[in-house]
Length: 302
Ligand SMILES: N[C@@H](CCC[C@H](N)C(=O)O)C(=O)O
Image (cartoon, rainbow, N blue to C red; front, side, top):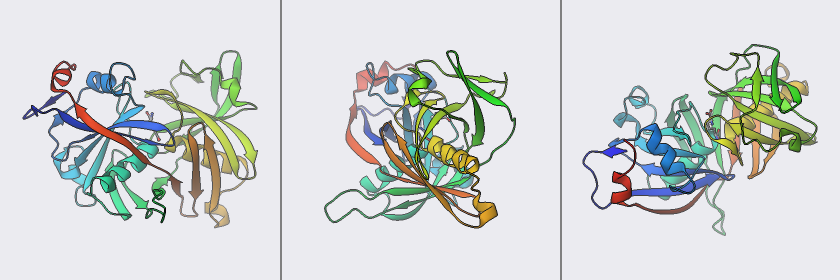
């Protein structure tokens, strides 16, 4: 990682999570940090670094060439990276944590907030904290889910195979309904998907079981991060795939449909509306903050 000028006192960071999908947060309002994939991987390493499923760089939209075209619609750009250093279009839990950070840092207030992402400008609503200080939930308008071809997607773990639904929430997902979440195995390796070439840029794979009416539970293997305890875009993909399986399509019925999605790290509520918009509501927590040591920073891969 390089910065110009380098801060002799070290680099501030924070740590946060959304339903235990956890992130290293690097405030970089003026867009001075250049963070390569290897440096991201070290920062996200749970032994050699701070540890996280991903990294959120907080930069003014106008200060980054990727987001500058969106700067008239959003002040801040969420520059999200997976823990292996790869770039993803969107991160739903990350966006809630990003919004929580802005409020925590006094850079935004509870209420509506527009945030630039690689999937475009997304609208966030930050609820006021409760009277007892419990942080309010955060709702993200995740945009419209796309259910593109190809049909006939199959997910394989060991000797088990399931048909899967292809859902794009800005990033790609393959959603498989299973009898038992344990059938997904240890998920230390990425599940196989077929046909070959269906996901040239990789895919997030969700395994889903029913828990009750409009209530499911899931596990996820994330592209670039491995199994995580939660995935916001994944929960949205699961809710949309489950609604279609259940014969519910708000665009047809004219009525919103809402699912409770339980993940190993907590609960998200996902609503799909007649205009196709998918909204995700859940918590976001800032865990702590610190300073990256200058010597350690200097030794990071460039
Ligand atoms: N955990 C995220 C998704 C992060 C990106 C994903 N791994 C990808 O590569 O598409 C979420 O909460 O949505």
